[in-house]
Each structure stands twice: as C-alpha cells, then as structure tokens.
Length: 204
Image (cartoon, rainbow, N blue to C red; front, side):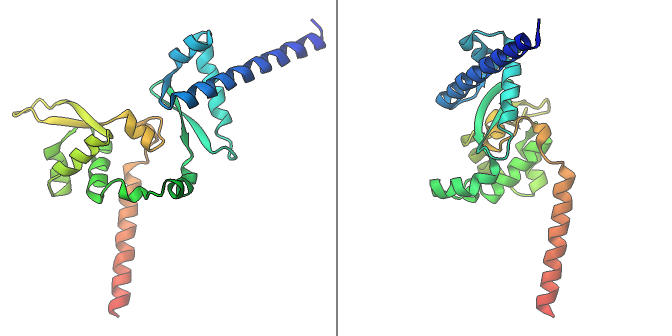
C-alpha cells in the first residue's frame, strides 16, 4: 500500500466521521433530552463501542472556546447544554434571573443534600437549624432531588439524594465535578472576615 492509498483511506475515514457527527448533532438537537449512546448506535447502525468513541471525540470538539454549546455525558446519556459563561446573555433573552429560581433556603438545603446524600429531612434540619420542609418540597417539584429509600432507624424516615436533572441543571457530568466542600468553608470564613472588617470600618 503506497502513501496515496493511505491518504485516501484517512480522508474517507475523516469524511465518514464528519457525516456521523452531523447526524448525531441533529439527533441531539431534535431530541432536546439526553440520548443514551446505545440508542444512538442503533439509529446510526454502528457498534456501541464505536459510537461511544465518536461521541467522546465529538464532545472534545465542543470544548473549544468558540462554541456556545457543550456536549455532556450523564450516566452514558449525552445531551447539549449551553456554556455557563454565556448564562448572563441567555437570561437576558429569557428575561429571567437565575437567583429567582431557588430561594436561599432551597440552595442551602440542596447544598447539604449534595454533600451528605442520602440524608433525611431531620438530619438536614439539624444542620440548618431550621425546618426544611418547604425547601425540600421546592427541590422535589423542580426534580433536583428525589426520594432515595428509607433509613433503617425507628420511624424509617425518607432519605433524599440528587437527580440527573440536578446534574443537567448545573452542567455537571457527575458529582465528582462538584467543588470540594472545604472550598465553600474557606469562602464562608473569608466572607465573614470581610463582613467583620466592613462593620468595624463603618463603626469607626
């Protein structure tokens, strides 16, 4: 096999991949929901392993800075989400404010569930120091958390955990991408220190 033959094969492979990328992009756009790579493999008539390799290569293309979308993988299901750095402009289009989506109580409750799941309502209340019934209800309605069985203690209280919708909402592929809890603790200490300094300056 000469050099020209090798180049022709490489060109054909590149052309084939580009065609698959085009098809997959259309499928994900029309679906609007996460698609399992096995389902995509069935549609494009390719092996599951080859399809997964295609998707991972396709995902890298969307990591480029000039793209407005990114392709994420949640439990072997792929979907497009907008890049977080463009959220301010998207909010202007939708005329919404992300801070209005969840109250401070709901965000506090969600953070506790994220890092302590599965966890019961009573345990959440003990950490927050106040009741969390309404916050939990809000998070359940938004499908950011779910019931995750019952704890094997007297009364068998319901335990709560995050959902795939939570990952999708915050643009995460898995919980391992969450910042370390220590970073929040350090930030909280720093914020408290700044507030104290500001208060002292005002009093002076």
